[in-house]
Image (tube, rainbow, N blue to C red; front, side, top):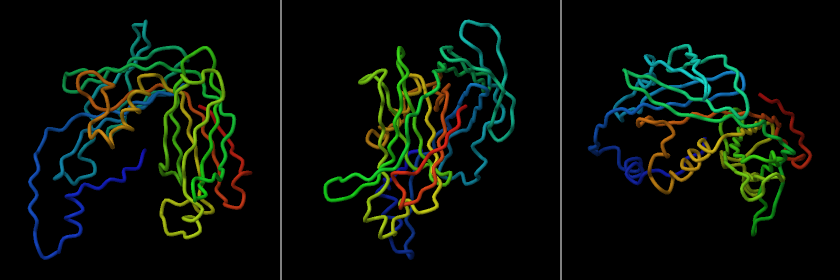
Length: 278
C-alpha cells in the first residue's frame, strides 16, 4: 500500500509539546462504516470485512465483521456460491473464474445488501523487471524498471505493487490508452546513490533485501478506485464508491504475475527475476 508521509499539524504539536502539560482533545464520535476488500483470482475468492474504528477503540480485533453473508455469481447465470466464514472478518471460496467474464459479489450485513462487480482480464505479460541507475539533475537515482507487453485488442489496466521483505514498498497503476498493444514501462523511484552510501534512511534498499513485484491485470472499475486512492493525499476525501449502499472498499477480479529478485548493489543491472503466475 502506498506510504503516507503527511503528519497532521495537531499531532506534530502534541508530539513536540512538553510532557508536563496535558492537552485536551475534542473529536467527534462517528458511527462505524463497513469496509470490504474482495479479491478474486482464477481459482479462488477472498473477502475481508471490517468496520472503521474510532480513536478511542484500542482493541486490534474490534473492527472485524463476522456475521455477514458473502455470495458470488457470474453475470448472466442464476447459480450463486456462498463464501465460507473463516473468522476474524475473512471469507473464502475455491472458485474458478475466466477472462472476459463479469462477476458480481453481494455482501449482506444485518439484512442490508451491498454489491459490486468486476470483469476478469487476461494474464499480464511481463517482458522484464530490473533495477537501473539514472541521472536525475545532480543525483544518481535508483529505479525499479518494469516492462509489460500489452495484450492487443482489449482495453487493459494494471496494478503493480513492489514489496521489500514482504512489506509494501511502492505501488502504481497504469493503463494502455496511450499505447495499446505495445510495450509499456513503469518506473518506481527507490533511492539515490547518496542516500544508499550514507545508509541513514530506513527507506533505502540494502544488500540482502528481498524484492517481490506483483503485476495484476485489473478492470476499469478497480483502476478507477485505485486512481482515486492515489488522489487522497491531495483531496482529503475517501476513494470513489466501488460498492453500492455506502460500503467502503473494492472488489477486483484479476490475474497476477509475481516476480522475485534479491537486491545486491553490485549487480543492479544484471539481477535476474524469476516469476510465477496465478
